[in-house]
Image (cartoon, rainbow, N blue to C red; front, side, top):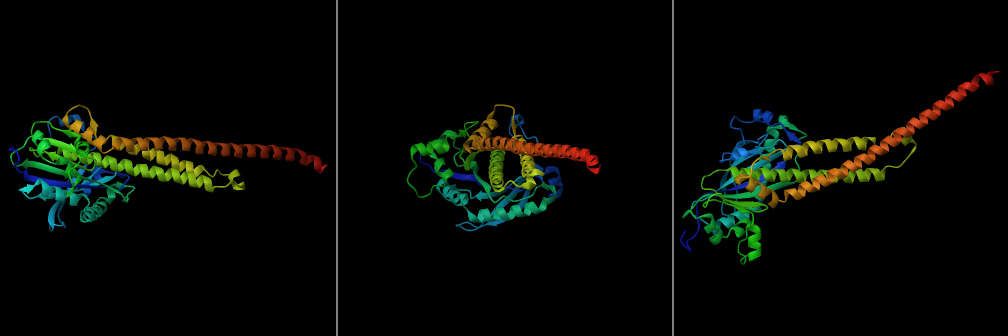
Length: 373
C-alpha cells in the first residue's frame, strides 16, 4: 500500500448485535419447528474449527430487511435473530458500507451506531416478535430490562489489499473502535490499550477486539470470528443477568429475616421453611444455568479461533462477572445452610414439645383412676 494513500473500503459492513435475556431456557429444537424453514444451526467453517465444539449450537433465522434511520439518511439493514439454549436471544442488524467509504467516514457512522436509539428501538421491536414466535419453546419467559450491545466492523476488501501490519501502522483503528470523531489525537497509551488484543492468522487478515466493539479484516469472508464474539457477548449477558438475580435474592433473604418476628405460631411452623425452599430452588437453577453457559462453547485445541475467543472473553471481562456469580453462589449456599439449620432447630423444638405433651398426657391418664376412687 503506497504511503499516504487513503484507505477505502471496497466491501464491508457493520454488524450490530443487541442481545437480550428472554427466558430461563430455550428448547432449540422446538424453536426450530416454530420458526421458518430457513432457520439454521450455527456451524463454524474455518479450517481447524473442529477444535471448537458447540454442544448445542444456537439457532439463527432471518427476520428480513428493515429501514434504519441514520443522520445521513435512512438505510436498509438485514436483520437476523439467533437463539441460545441458556435463554439469550441476539438480534443482528447488518448495516451496509458503501463501496469507496473512507476510514474517517466509517468512523463517523460507527460512532452513531454505537449509541443509536433508533437501532435500539428496532432491536427491541424485533426481539418482541421473536419472543412471541418461539413462546412454546421457552421456559420461564421474560424480558430482562437490560441488554448487551456489541459492534463488529467487518471488512472483506480494502483498496490496495493492505497487510495487517500496514493497517496497524496507517489506519486509526483505536479511533474507529471508540467512535472518536473530531477530537485531538489519542494518547499513545490509550491507543495501545484499545488495540492490545489483536490477532492475525496470515499476513493479510486482522482482528482487533475491544470491550464493546471489534474490527475484523477477513478477505475470505468467513463469519466465524464475529460468531464467536457474539457467543462471548451472550455469555456476558447471562452472567450479568444472574449476578443481578443473586443480588436481589440475597437482599430479599436479609429483608425477610429482619422482618420476621418470633411468636407463638413459630412453635408449630418455622418462619424460614419456605425461604429455605426458595433458596434451594435458586441454587439448583443457578447450577443448571452455569453448566449451560459454560458448555455453550468448548475449546479442545490451542489454535487461532480459540485464541481469538479467549482474548475476547478476557477483553469483555467475562471472568470477573463469572467470579462474582460464583462468589455469590457460595454465599447463597452458606445462607441456605443457616436457614436449613434454623428449620431443623424449629423442627426439633416441635418434637420436644410433642414428647413433653405425651409425657404429661400419660401422667394425667395414670392419675384419672385414682381421682375417681
